[in-house]
Image 1 (cartoon, rainbow, N blue to C red):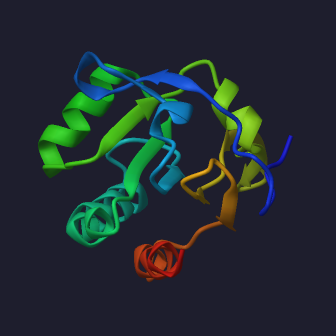
Image 2: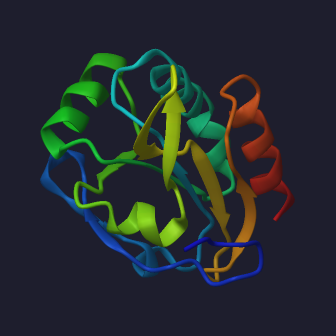
Length: 154
């Protein structure tokens, strides 16, 4: 499945760091930046997470929620957050249903070996639950600034 601009964002409830949970529909009324990343504490994922952390005051200024999603466990998320002082929610999609719903669980290839993994992607969801921007195959450099600009333009 894939999610396109203008379509309703698939709802979900996922466990989060700190033993909590997040439900997308409960966040209606504010924009949501939902970003999918492959793995906690790897170089690209850490760089992206720290970028969102550093810009979080700017996202908060427009009342936007930032949620990072990977298939890592809640315990892994807790360690990742503590190590890098992340101040936004990390959700755990261990069974991959949310990744499937958003079309981020894809076949990848490295050194000729094919495997399934999370395609780095970000979805900007407006206050009414409609997808307004989609970034796929994200390159970390400059990405957070592009997302922030799109959120501020809502």
